[in-house]
Image (cartoon, rainbow, N blue to C red; front, top):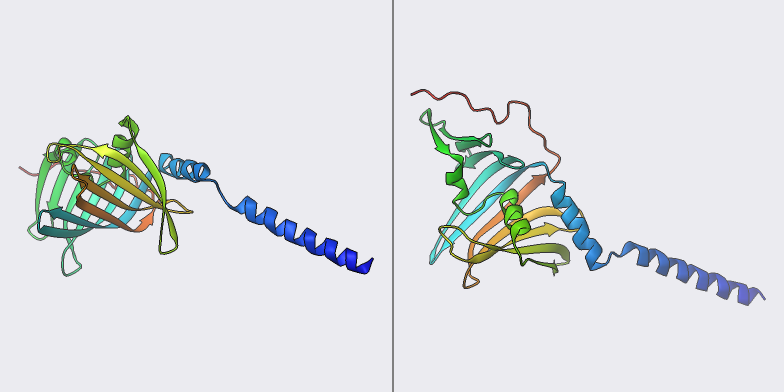
Length: 214
């Protein structure tokens, strides 16, 4: 009788472990929904960005700090080789100004001029993704880390056809990289997000642009 009781206890304990383990594992569809919810709820973020551009045999790499408020306000501070702040680009969604603190000069440009370049922002990717008829999503594991990867077509005046990926690191669904491919599936740019902070919120005048001297 005592032996039967021990056996029943062991079987019950194993069953409880299996139930707990099963409850802790999400299905792929649940993971995708969690990732999409994280992107849909993204209102603003701050990050340090490494941006590598690949043009044939030539590669160029830039580093900058980036603050973004959806859908189109941003501040970018370029980081030079000496790890000091270089040019700053600010947009309030209507106007865009490039400031060069080293020479005390400023230049105002049309917001659309930056949109013609390869996307630098998560909002750019999402705009292409939600408008695309065919998109992709998959779960990828690299060195024991799980990523959710969203893929969509991408095109502009510089890249006739191609695709772009947005990688989110699971389980917190933190954006960690964006990769752009050309029509031959060759990588043309890689954006790495470091120290990504989705809880960052701007002050009232963070994107304020004053009147430029003429």
